[in-house]
Image (tube, rainbow, N blue to C red):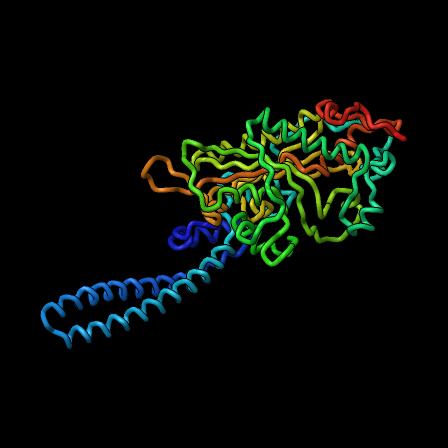
Length: 425
């Protein structure tokens, strides 16, 4: 959510920023609702001031023996009390309408974000490693997984339908090894504090991170007020909803393993075969709460933290700076890490690392105080995947496949897997 004062006093800046993302900001709706809310607030303040004046006069009139005038003043006070109650109720309704409009505003792109509206206009910042070479066409991950009995797609489809997987044997162990290793690495090497949050959250939590109301159709609803999380960002961010940090405690850095649940509506086909697009998948998420003046440096370090994992696994990737129109509504600046998939012969997104500035903090009311007695300010919040398990598994299977059909396990995972190679049966 944007600063209300920014929308109120600099609407053209907001309009232009939203248009960089290809979004028409509801400026006119906001101005009408804001005018009504401000008029109601002004009238309420006048009635309250009048109520205070009349209430004070009643005792004075009685003390002066002016009983008739005092009775008249008491009737006037009763009338004013009812008017105030009506105005307060109307004010709550107008505030609710105004907030609903404010929730429709996107975050504004940072000045360093390039213009553009298509993925092709994203900028490659750097590339790490080299594309692996094979004597023959590399086998795609779903064929490797079936050959090595790592994933049972048919039984998963029988149990839950398309877009799900049952990992079996060393496949299940590889999934577990990946998220356990990533958690350990993020804690040990990058200084994050691990948390294990709930996988179900209520509506306020979804609103706090910007998933509702905009992305309702992409989410799974469990009950009237519980939703399956699309990412660990949601519960970890909302841990601190309606709280005030001591500024001396910032930054606060968390990593969390969660299962994630997304509708991923779209046509099935070659580009979505196997475990490339899943309704349920495992992921390790990084979330940072930082001082506003440090958030862009914190973003660069967040990207580096995710990169260290890929480098430790020896996987080829590149880093993209997303253009404004491909960035999503919540971010002010976003980098995507894309991992090379030999079997797909293309890069696959493995992580998005974004700065939201105070956008989520305003929605979730997460603040900090620089010193005792100072006015609370909104924190800046960042998050990134480090990393999503399915596509990481895709790259490992495809990059480390041998002509024999075996797959070599990356060295950091061997203590977790208890083997150096997944051998063909």
